[in-house]
Length: 299
Image 1 (tube, rainbow, N blue to C red):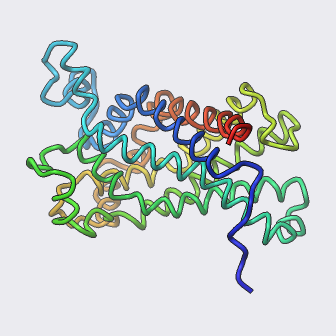
Image 2 (cartoon, rainbow, N blue to C red; image 1 turned 120 degrees about the horizontal axis):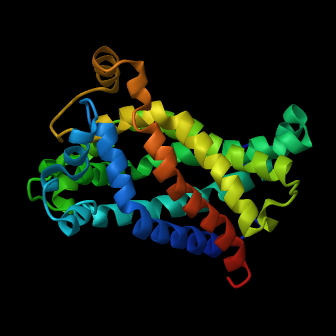
């Protein structure tokens, strides 16, 4: 018997779209430059020092006036907006939907295997993992955003429609690595958040968490997610930022990275990601967790 997927959750679909969409827009406006810096650091294959840091971050604008340098951190804002808002709506709005499906069809299985309390948390994490795997459908927008940030020469004056028509499935390059990164990363994000709410705050209904409780739970989830996904994120980024005609496989990227830079390079950019990208995830996740129940009161 196939599982029931048309389920009604505690929050309306409109509330989930509005809450997660608003969090995505707010995150984009505040953190797009931070994301650009992190991507450029991860894509850099040379030694990083104080003398090379500025050219790595600002590229050809390294010696330009401060205002122009700051504007250079906003490449691909249109692609970023399309990707980030869609991705946040899918991730933060989709995870509760997957959780509703699991709860409707498999709650007894989770409870019998892990117990009632742990089963609820594992179900939250599993719903997050399923959401992360499905996120691969948004890969073309993510690939275009990354290329615009770190390899704008790949566009050569072409618009987004022309790129989609000409490149086709090339935009899904690295899809396997993306799924391999998203599954444990999203599991850790939603799982660590659920564990924090359950054990640290003793919350039974996660929707009733306060803004502060959501913030702390989001910190735990973000740190766990970024750390778990870091190696595969580095590989995915290097696959995606290559020129469109490049056919470099993930295995080749890993071999070259280990040979030339050592295993530690798999975690290149982890510290800046936790310090500056982590708050981006904390901000949007906290906002989404707080706004979705709020919107549910009205829609």
